[in-house]
Length: 368
Image 1 (cartoon, rainbow, N blue to C red):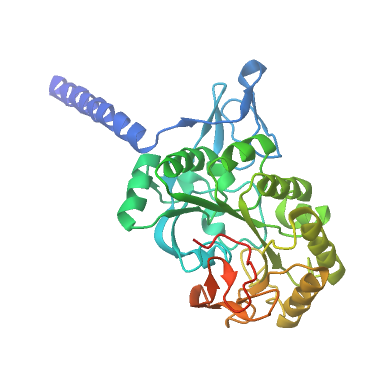
Image 2 (tube, rainbow, N blue to C red; image 1 turned 180 degrees about the horizontal axis):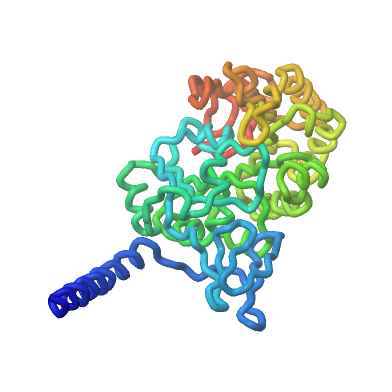
């Protein structure tokens, strides 16, 4: 009886080991690793990440601030590669928001988990403030993603929702394939990225909407655990490299709604990026860790819009409102509406070859 019992135990262990042998390759196929770009190997198997301005020193077995780049025995791996938490083929480009980039188009939007900022007002915190193992995802290699985009009938890929910087390797490899096949690449980003990786990305990027979250170091540190100066540098680099650029500024009541600071921001945009840079002044709605705040008063948004136009910015929008107020595009010369919108949809387009059909004024943007 004892020998029989011993045989059963040994046989059960054998089956367990056998099943594990089959399980291991299945896990490695579902959870592959990709060596990260832009990092430096140091002594004692430490590394320094060079992707974003934090430049994290990471010991073996540890992760950087973003939680998605891990040092494994002296090699840094991007845990976000091909792990799509969202792959949506029917996003209006106006949702990004892009108002001067192929209006009325739809994008194939993709995102992974994670972010390199910790904004207390984050609208997508369920994925941006999570690590890959904390969310459900689908493994979608860049070539498979391109195939999905083709199958959907879209020709624009938007890297969005969370922060594209932290899935840089995934975005870059996909963007290279997309560009080679005549597809268009755009991103919505916080702009908190180092110069070298951003310049590499610019080779394949057609458009970018950057969240300029505020216009002071204090605001960035207190509300986002980040820094303003690297974002301003990113904006200049994107402009310098000919990437179509739009800016979104979410106005939080009591935090970044000082009208004089907003004026300073608008002057900086005018002087460094040009008067034709579209600016989206967006209404805050209680989110994440700031649910105790009230939505941004309409009056504040309207005053901010007036300031931006007084400074000289030609395309200023007020968004995140239940009505379409402030989302139409007007000719800066004859003041007539050239693009009429409601929500994320274009209802009227009075552009002819990128010019106002009423007075022939050129409207800056990518229209065809």
